[in-house]
Image 1 (cartoon, rainbow, N blue to C red):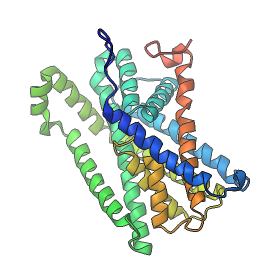
Image 2 (cartoon, rainbow, N blue to C red):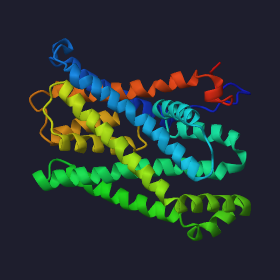
Image 3 (spheres, rainbow, N blue to C red):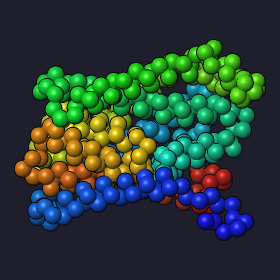
Image 4 (cartoon, one colour):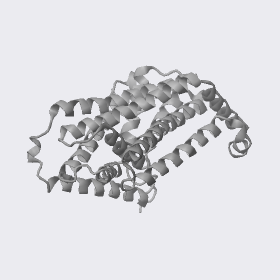
Length: 330
């Protein structure tokens, strides 16, 4: 129990459970690598590994650019440097705190303090940023899984994954349609939030819906982000001498990221890597060298964690970039 007079809330049991799931699965993946014969990693192909790391990192600036575009569509000015710094800090919090939205809260609070009259617009940009990223992932998952099923038939749990991804994509599209048509929810919003806040939300939703060119460009960036990640995984597989074709890499990566979106771990850690190992097994990849499949999954996690830790550097960025309302800096 917290000490009397302390304002710090107790750490919820669900958060501990998520950490346990993440560390447990990652420990299992690491154990699979340790018990295998990977020859001290001397076999690594650095010509494939280095581009994989760089491509994975390139996806993050594109996401920051996407958010800045969505803010501009709402009439909220934010410099490119400021948008990138806030995004990197948010990405760090999203990756290492339970819930997966702590970084979004950081972005919201920082932008709200700079633009207190545009809180609804800032919130709409963050929601749209999330929805576009998830929508692009689900669409690519449906295409990759559908292509794999069409070419090789049902393998393991690929068909249920395809159906689940397609269903989630339909629900997401329906939700996005409703959000950009305030007439559907305006009366309820007035009752819950009051007339003033409901009106602000309606204006933000209408502004987002009117900027179709921006939404199209942001959607294209979202697709590019995921294709970079899929290509990075394919190169990582080549770096550990694991034979895998680009379609199989896309199927495995898409399934892994979709699973990582489930709220059962911390930042998707562990669930993403465990799903990757499972799907590659369904595809018949690495049956003779399971340790290399686990090494690929571990490398996948290390690269993602490496770039997430770049948010620590953003925390200590100069104050004029980072803003005075965030911790750290000089």
